[in-house]
Amino acid sequence: MTTADFESRAQSLRIVATAPIARDIFRFELARPDGGDLAEFTAGAHVELRAPNGLVKKYSLCNDPAERARYVIAVKREVNGAGGSLSLTTDAKAGDELLVGPPRNDFPLAPNVGNFLFIAGGIGVTPILSMLRHIKSEGSARAKLYYFTRAPEMTAFREELSASEFSGQVVFHHDGGDPDKAFDLWPILEKPQGRHLYCCGPRPLMEAVRDMSGHWSSAAVHFEDFGATKAHKLENKAFNVRLARSGRSFEIPADLSILDALRAGGVHVSSSCERGSCGTCRTRLISGEAEHRDLVLTESEHATNIMICVSRAKAGDLVLDLPEAT
Ligand code: FES
Image 1 (cartoon, rainbow, N blue to C red):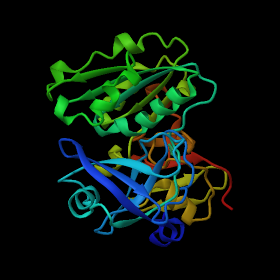
Image 2 (cartoon, rainbow, N blue to C red):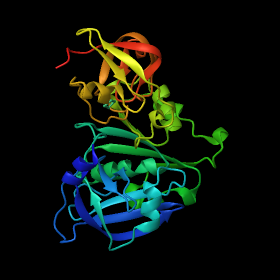
Image 3 (tube, protein in one colour):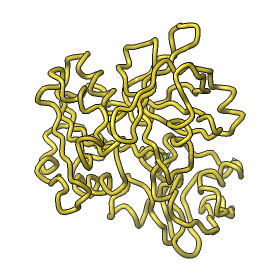
Image 4 (tube, rainbow, N blue to C red):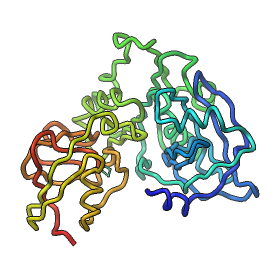
């Protein structure tokens, strides 16, 4: 989304309350200045928000979707991040107004599911908290959350999730930053048992969960990564993509994804998350060596599929099976 797109869709919301809820994690409550209803959202949704320093970033909504008077987000202060969360947690205070885009959901709860397994790491608990609240208020499904952080004092929403409301539904695990003390995921993932799995957290956690849930139905496994994909950390190089059906070739510059470069060339491709976690942009890879940066494809799918919103060429060029350019 461009700056103009964001500004045209965003509204100014007031910070009605803010408070620290764990080490370096702050809760913000946002409402319309006139006190009116906000746009509805569904569990797992996020909003884009412009920090005082001008940077726009996505934040999951963590309150109950039934609430219309406020949006609640939690922001982790990232000293080495791009600067948006640092600006928010340093410069924004109650009474200030911020530009906030409309809610969007790339991580929705599947309908008609009777049993959910949630796995959260660190600040990744935020969309899952909204889901737990929604499931609780609906009262129609079972849910269990495994929530991993380094230490109790780094655990956002610890009090809420320890409350009787969620009794028996939340397992906390603190590893102290020691990989040898990481939670053993296999016992909870070994048998899918008809559950839907939702995972949000740091990339290594999501990769571990993906690797251990390969035997689950792909329709029952859902990831949200807050945009923290490898794509943001790896160095990009330019390469070429050829569309086998039309024969057209496109140069993919270092600063554009395949998806964006094709769109710029007039090729329409469906997408949703654009972060390699939803599976919408799956494209058949006819030839070439891809560097897979998504969270969707399994090892066995890598040779013939690519998620063009994040993945790139490892070496040489790629040939894709996409409809003729329009
Ligand atoms: S758009 Fe979601 S994986 Fe590409």
